Length: 340
Image 1: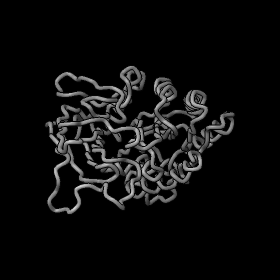
Image 2: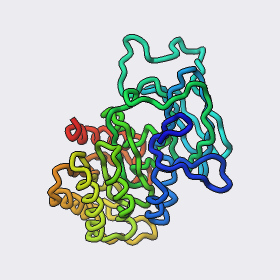
Image 3: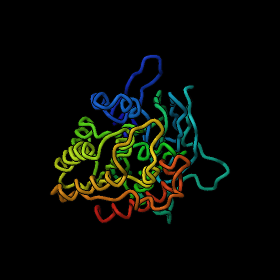
């Protein structure tokens, strides 16, 4: 999406919310959001690898943001290169980009001998966490990045809070960002914390999008934790996978079974009724892929991607930083032959 002469990446709707300044950066269109569970309708409004991108040809630019619900982590990148981390809250905050820091000799990485990887000289503001509102972008000679200033291929990821990155402190620490970085892909994060239920609305949305080249579907510990039987999971996940794979026969789709976690120990989330095992869900997803007849489908076992319990955080469900890096490494290894 292009607005304010900038590209709003992983944003499908600008939403006005009464009592809040600016526009909410929403990851799916409103019609899709309304087709999710009640919880999903709220969670999909949270920023996840949402970016504001532009080239400031005349120098400095200012971007004003606010985060509602709770604070959001902000990372500023100049192309492939990290600049700084910030945190924003409900009070609007203006970020100034492009001012040279006198402590550093080099004001730009684009010099002879420095390799270009994925991005050109594009200012990138990555936001992650709460409901982020964009109030204003100011600066002279701002323009959206050109196609040759961004990665050529896009990676779309659907899943739970693990995909969203609910346990990490920065956007680039999610497994989605980690895998994308290793493969030189541009990530689109559609993780829905606590509410990845394979609804027809989100399935049709992903199936109908033409802006991705490879997708992962991480399905879905939310359904396991909320009493969905293996048979019902198979039916709902199968319908989603079929819709996406059949509409995009030339695009690889990798279905990811449950990651290592406390359900493997036979434990349940307090107050929840569980009617299946982790292994039953993994086998159901594997069978959907193997029996589908779609050449563009593949399966990856999440317990092999996260193969060390030390990669989990204290709740024994959400990966910490080490776990996210491990998943990103192994997922990239699995995805690479599907792409190149």
